[in-house]
Image (cartoon, rainbow, N blue to C red; front, top):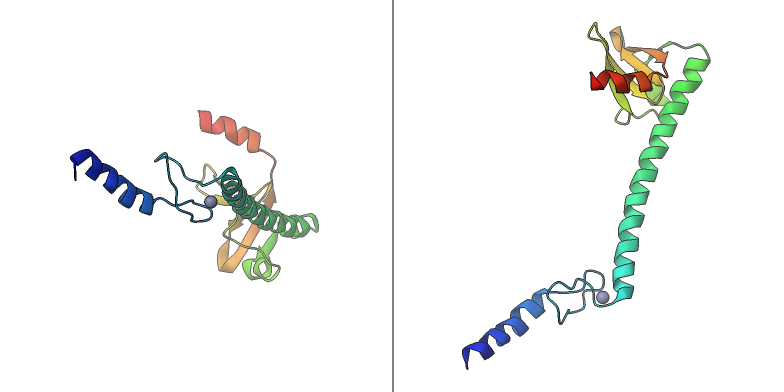
Length: 142
Ligand SMILES: [Zn+2]
C-alpha cells in the first residue's frame, strides 16, 4: 500500500471510529472538528446543557430565598437570638449564603442577602439586618 493510501486508511479507520456525535453518538465523517452530525443534534445538546445549568441556578436561588425567608420572618418577629437547631428545623441550609463579613474586631458574620448571623455561645446565633452591601464594595477597593 502506498504511504499516502496508508495514511488515508489510518484516517478512515482510526479517527472516524473515535469521533461520534456528542448528542446521538452517530459516527462523524468529514471535518475533524465536527462535534455533531446535524444542526438538530447541536441544538438538542446545547438545549440540554442550558437546561441543566438553569436547573442548578434555579435550585440554588430557591434555597437562598428559603434561607432568607426564615431569617427575615424570625428577625422581623423580634427574634434576634435563636438556636441553630431552630433554624435547621425550619429548613435552613447552612451551606448556602450570599457573603461573609469580618468585622474590625474579628467577628465573622454569615449573610443571606441583608440578614446575617454570628455564632454565639452554646449553638445560639445572633441575628442582624444590614443593607450595607454597597459600603462593603467600597471597603474592598481600599
Ligand atoms: Zn447526532
